[in-house]
Every structure is written in structure tokens, then in C-alpha cells.
Length: 233
Ligand code: ADP
Ligand code: MG
Image 1 (cartoon, helix red, strand yellow):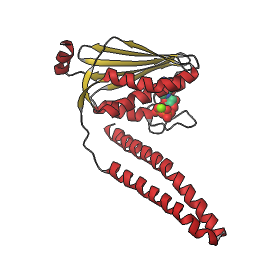
Image 2: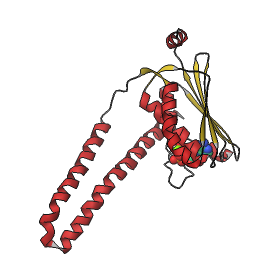
Image 3: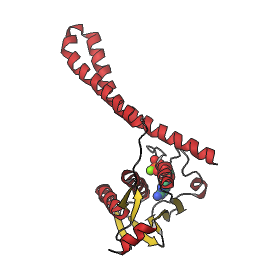
Image 4: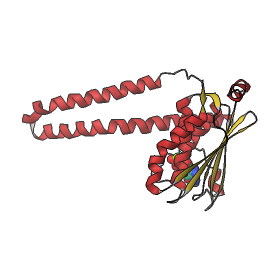
């Protein structure tokens, strides 16, 4: 099974990258094709349009440069950070979306602060993926509860929605690359989530009931040193 996991991780990275590349390159390519057609039909206008075309070629080039930077293996840096603060940050960001459908994000934080060694933008990406799914699954005027607890040396986060739920035959498919039930879904969110939490030595579990809702639970270890630090506050 570890072989299968490795394969899906690779697929997820490839899929994300492919989606990003496609999106970023489509616009300048469309512009370039349009101007090429104009020139083909009106050769006297060539000079007029080459400036714009050069600009678009440069844009394509700089996108490719950026992708090459991304492709270089980077050392990820783990830092002691407060995950409650990160969660609040992401919740605030998504609230701008949620209010449009009158969905409330209800904070039920028993821990005010939970400092763990982590990669901030990766953990934020996890919170974003889970909360987005919860919002997408919820009906208008719904409520999503976010629980944060420290249980012994474990940080426990639970995201509870009261939305459509997941049928048991589909629950088994969760985390498979590209498994999505949404017309514009990527089917990569939970896979990436699982990968990031595993990298942080934590676990993800999902409970769901059709028409009742879904609970996504994340547990991550709080190192004893930071436990002591947190207690001295
Ligand atoms: P995507 O959101 O792009 O479809 P994800 O990996 O985030 O990809 O989710 C995969 C699938 O899992 C979703 O398409 C959906 O069917 C199901 N799912 C995930 N979270 C929830 C949730 N909170 N409620 C209902 N279904 C969910
Ligand atoms: Mg998703």
C-alpha cells in the first residue's frame, strides 16, 4: 500500500502543476493566436502589433521561468507557529465567500493557542481545502463548526458541516487522485491535505452521513517542549 500512496502523491503534484500551467499560459497564448490571425489577414498591420506580441511572448517566458523555480527542490522550513492563529486567518479569508450564501463559520476553540513545528503555508492550505469543501457541501444559511482542542500532547481540529454528506461507497474513494463529484472539482484537495498532514506526523479521518453532514478530524502532535511553553503563558 505504501507504493500506491507514493504514486498518488506524484500524480497529485503533477495534476496541480498541470492545472496551474494550463491556466497561466492560456491567456497569453490566446492573445498571440489572435494577433497572428490579424497579421495573416492584414499584413500591413504587422508593425502595429509586434509590440503587443513581444510583450505577450515575454509573459509566457516569465511564467516558464517561475515554473522552473518551483521545479527546483526546495528545503521546507518547519517553524514553531500557532495553528489557532492560522486557522482564524483562513476562516476570515473564506468568510468573505461564505457570507454570500449566509453560511456561518462558528468557532468552538477550547485552546487559545497551539504552537507546533509546521510549515505555515502548507497548514493554511489544509485548512483552506477542508473549509472550502465544507462550504461547497453546505446549503445556504448553513453552519460550519470548527473545534480546536488540545488533548494531552495532541492538537485536535474538527471541521463539522451539516451539508449533503458522503455516501459510504464514495467515502472509500476519498483521497484517490482526481476523485471528484463536482463539475469543476480537481479531486486533489483531500489528497494534498492528507499528504501535508502526514508530513507533519499527524492523521486525518473523515466521518460522514448522507443528508446529515461531514466531520473532518485532524490530529497533530504537540511537542512536549512547546506544551511547557504554552502552559507558562
Ligand atoms: P474537490 O473538492 O475538487 O472535488 P476534494 O479532494 O477536496 O476535491 O474532495 C473530493 C470529493 O470528496 C468531493 O468532490 C466531494 O464529493 C467529497 N467531499 C469532500 N469534502 C466533503 C464534505 N465536507 N461534504 C461532502 N462531500 C465532501
Ligand atoms: Mg475540495
